[in-house]
Length: 271
Length: 157
Ligand SMILES: Cc1cc2nc3c(=O)[nH]c(=O)nc-3n(C[C@H](O)[C@H](O)[C@H](O)COP(=O)(O)OP(=O)(O)OC[C@H]3O[C@@H](n4cnc5c(N)ncnc54)[C@H](O)[C@@H]3O)c2cc1C
Image (cartoon, rainbow over all chains, first blue to last red; front, side):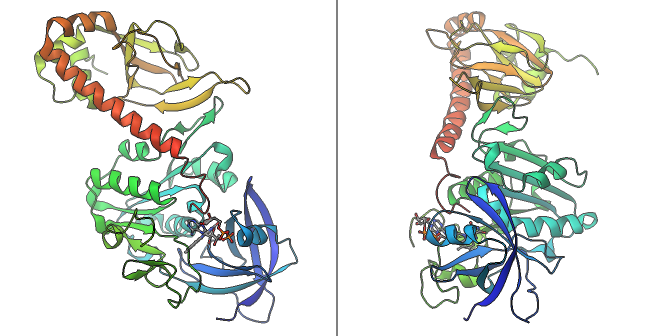
């Protein structure tokens, strides 16, 4: 439960309110190994702790990368941490995207807003194993083009023949070349063999609910749809009950869960 | 590419799929093929809406003029989408600008022609209204989600 000290070695602004931080161990300890989809508890000393997904490439053991949106006291303090400063990190915690089981599947990644952060390691892992997959699609939703994370990388991915990429924003100026509308319309237009597809979803719960329904509408099985449930949590070790979703603890069973296992409680405000 | 009749094209568009042949024929009778170059304006907000379009291939943006920074994009529509329903109801005025953002091939339908057929053939009118109600419902649902600003809410991911 004691956080290890990690030093900020890089800090990049992603959007008006989001930053990506690179962290290296500030003690003599080893770098962290993690599975795509896992998160850490990040401690801004004197302010508090927040669960933040790992957004880096699982193939590279350092630095440890997190992408944080400033929404309150703790996340603001993490976003403010400048290179040289030290943050506390404990983890990794939580379940992972089923990357080992993606062989032969059409992998469909659907991300909204900051939800792209926990999916990025899965995307990198899928690109790494692209030859074994039947297909790889990234559908991305955002508020406006300026609110998209990892924009330089998205530009490269747009030209990458290994990946089919479609981006839809809620509103845009006339210079925007992508789609405008809800991300679920991208699902309707998709070339999809539902029996061979595995979907990985992360974003606002409302978006995930509608995306899951659209995928089921296309014939996908509820067990082939995975979501990262980023309900608020406090202890990350099933002690406090803050993140309980019915009988499940997001911090133990999640954050990555199968739609069939949480469908019943998804969409309820507090369970 | 072999030429296909408007009826054939319509039968493959989701909005008209499954309609009876005689209805498709009557609808197709009010349509003709057309094309727009990327950037070309298709309709302007406030103009008389005598026409609606079914996109065969391409992409169309619905826009609304904004005081600063050029028009705001409200939605983009792709292959198979219907552009415009203002021809259905008085005062028959476009409520948005429509602009091709890629070279676009479409079928243009004469709204007055189709309204006339619907008035004299209520069964056709009923199925057409059903199909258009579905499009309007889909777009309403999408607009609601856009309005919810789901990505704007704190810690939304
Ligand atoms: C498993 C997991 C992974 C996460 N990964 C990331 C990540 O990669 N990047 C990132 O920016 N954030 C992530 N979050 C969310 C992040 O933990 C919260 O934004 C943070 O804890 C908020 O703390 P705060 O003190 O800054 O704001 P607070 O003052 O605690 O909260 C500010 C506002 O955000 C709301 N809020 C806080 N947390 C959540 C939540 N989880 N869901 C919905 N609303 C919330 C509060 O109700 C309040 O309205 C993740 C959460 C979980 C559970």
